[in-house]
Length: 118
Picture (cartoon, rainbow, N blue to C red):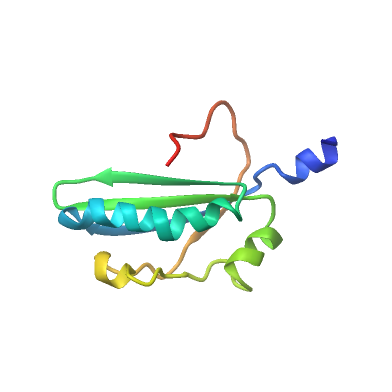
């Protein structure tokens, strides 16, 4: 692979979504989010992570997808990449429906930043 092509495929943008569910629904939502949210991204983004924080009464999920450019992200997310794309059953699971995603420019990344595979 040429250096120019390799540079094009380096993640430059991170798109971050957050959602909370009750502790009693967390395991079921984790399976649902993986199948309907993460798996479709695996074919479109350069990379995707699903993170989970269990608390006594609720669980927060964070998904981070990595993109080479805002243009590439827009091909998946549409004209406004900050617009939320709720999954069909999100209203059933989530404490509240998020109204935005966060889009950050990756300034620096070092070492192993991945995680376990699904």
